[in-house]
Length: 68
Picture (cartoon, rainbow, N blue to C red):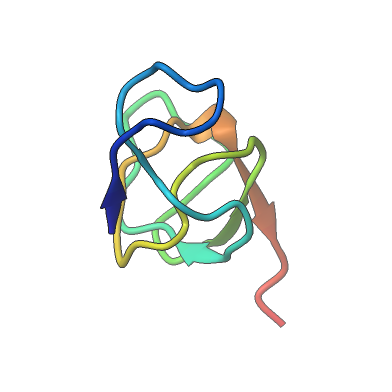
């Protein structure tokens, strides 16, 4: 679900809704050391667009959470 402006006071690019969520890492880059595929993660920043089935994120913007 993509939503274009105008949001009150927002003039930037389109955003995907959602701030809370949990995800599973599919792939990591060669320089990523704190995450591995299948790790569960939560967003470390807001407005990542968690109302989506998949998205790309910087490893620094994700926090690993316990699997259990």
